[in-house]
Length: 307
Image 1 (cartoon, one colour):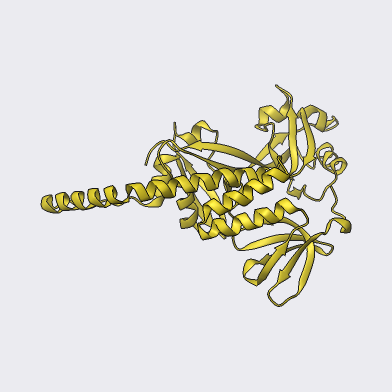
Image 2: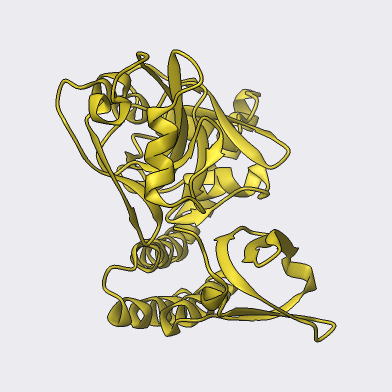
């Protein structure tokens, strides 16, 4: 999957009118990652005037994101739908479409409940005041922990899960302490603010939120064997990257925790994005130790259990 110069069809137009050609490989809240002939480059959004994408569905996605950020969810949904019409397999557009619908519903719910909530808050405040009881306001961290069962910590723009409540939605979905939260509703969240991410995770009771979790999975290997065959995994490149397309039951891959549809972003810290499949298999068949570490990303639907 080496990216040749002929594929550098996206154009980033900077505010100083400079044009940078490449392939947009990742998009974050404050920057984009652009693969160019000279290597991968991060460009801050504050320096970008606009991005002209190679494919029309990506341009519709860009319009959808712009309206999403303004809170104009009906317009965002319109452009996400146009992207899906062009490319029905565009998972990012599908996730964004569903997320914007959920935001529209939440905004409507907020409007219809506003008067009732204000009335109840005033009533409760008056009752507590008469009893001289302190008003308890839950933090976003506590609400997320109670509803989803996870606690987050942020370090240099990276969000890690440092606690999982037993029996919670997160625990039932297989999330573990030490996993990383890297996306919500198909959007990468690195470099975002913790308060903003907690806000996105909060929602109505019994509703769902789709997250992208990242985990390092060590797989034990033996010298002198066909490691790739022993793993029992079938790897292949799709639109989003290197995927586990199938996995054999009872083999080392499954027993170690790998799953079908996992996105493999690195093998022993070697980024797979720019490697052809034969080089990936060569990495697996020539381990440097008694284990191979797969860095995988997995889509998980979490159900909010309470507030």
